[in-house]
Image 1 (cartoon, rainbow, N blue to C red):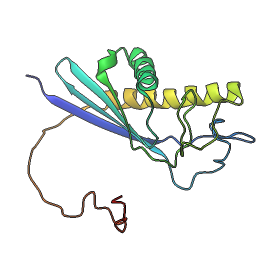
Image 2 (image 1 turned 120 degrees about the horizontal axis):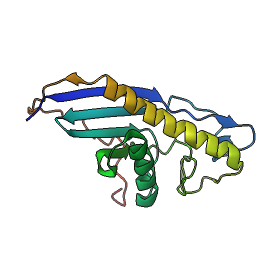
Image 3 (image 1 turned 45 degrees about the vertical axis):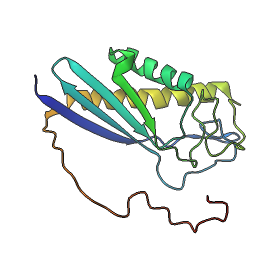
Image 4 (image 1 turned 90 degrees about the vertical axis):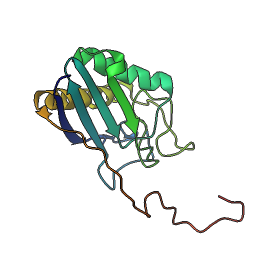
Length: 168
């Protein structure tokens, strides 16, 4: 068994705003961001095994869309598709990622690729930021040890809403 090596890179994925079609040119009602939209890229390597794991402040994508993103990044990094993990925070405050068929903010959000050139440019910018973050993390891998322990926290995943009569 080899040495576990780890690195992480975080970056802002805030969209550029089209003057008429909003965030990434896909979400006309989103004309500004309140807080940064972030992505974290974690790379784990041991011996000849490597995983590139992304965590995005975005709404999720369907399986086909997620697989297309993973494949594009894997090819750019010279990795197998299975070595790229794609996860999202499922924030319903994000715009629709260019090329996605799913809404960002909610199911009623108007979405589309209204200015195809702008959308393609924004999608490419997003993908390139992901690829470059992985390359940076790979070049900064450092030895690490993994520890396992047990703890207790009574306020994790606490729902502060009042109970609803319907149970929700």
